[in-house]
Image (cartoon, rainbow, N blue to C red; front, side):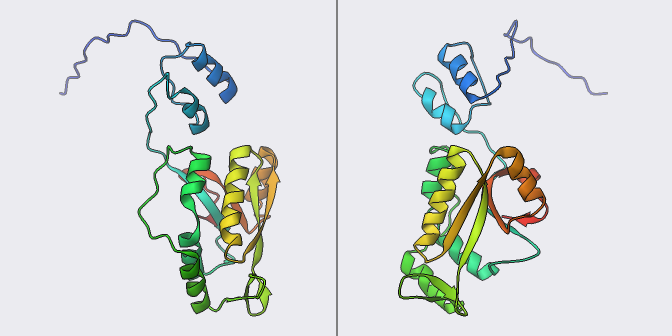
Length: 204
């Protein structure tokens, strides 16, 4: 039968501390009370790069726009164009402060994006508004009301605005936001979600 052999640990004792929020964690790091933490957000980690070694860990978090699966506002072809038009580096720099890595993919210029949308039946009015079949393209996005998410949502909306798409950002406190997406009150929501926690009614 198999036998497990372990070396004696060089650590005699260790203590686990719990903190209610990132502010308390940051204070403990500042006071030198901690040797190691895996609970720091990128926003907290960037404050201690000069005093602590900061390493990136793999994550299953999806940051992006989520659309109701059963009523598609955009076709997959249109989403592919919008995906290529979004300034994702700015988004990641805002929400992850440079600790995230973008996948390799082609970024479309404004003119390339507009040309691709024209082939899909979209037209642009004289004032720059994107439309299809005479109707302007506009939609609302539900987001959680925290500074980083709102900043990212605004950056996302700005990328779409350059294409002539108007997006209305609706911010909710955390509890209400969960109710909003669980009851599918909005066609779209924007956020940072663990893959295993993505609501079944939505797809990224």
